[in-house]
Amino acid sequence: GIQVEQSPPDLILQEGANSTLRCNFSDSVNNLQWFHQNPWGQLINLFYIPSGTKQNGRLSATTVATERYSLLYISSSQTTDSGVYFCAAHGSSNTGKLIFGQGTTLQVKP
Amino acid sequence: GAGVSQSPSNKVTEKGKDVELRCDPISGHTALYWYRQSLGQGLEFLIYFQGNSAPDKSGLPSDRFSAERTGGSVSTLTIQRTQQEDSAVYLCASSLRSGSGNQPQHFGDGTRLSIL
Image (cartoon, rainbow over all chains, first blue to last red; front, side, top):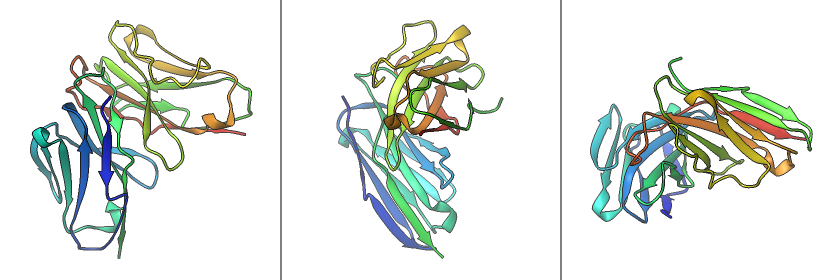
């Protein structure tokens, strides 16, 4: 089945800095989502982005399906951005389930 | 409700007991998923329901785990004879449909299960 890898595993930023998180996947995808898991464990939908580019405030994401990667950009980071960012993909060969990467743990320092 | 609702939010039980976890999906969502997140890990797929089709049970870790979805809405995940390795956060998600997997999944807040 599809494999999802995220990098970097950990990231420490100073408030106001920008960052790029990467997600590589091993097969073509029908669904790719980015999530933010906050310190309380809640999993928040950031983007549904099987292809193309989307922006939502300080966050944006780009998926290049032909090259099997997706990028999540965080600009002007804030302490509330801290938490774990997960990329998850649904491959064309498996039923509905999302395969999750291991996540990028982000800490934004004031 | 507006989002996926799970109950209980926390459950502590003794090893060997059975537990039932409940998920109420977003109204109108025909696809429902259960995932498990062990401490410090990513999410692991357990089971998937789509309408009246047979569920995809390929992620269930053992025959002690089972799930039902009655009336195409609420789902219960049952763990029999719980073991300490079952301790995890159990997350439920729903989506509009998933014939080709091209609808975003929306997650509940999870049930944190602790086996003593």
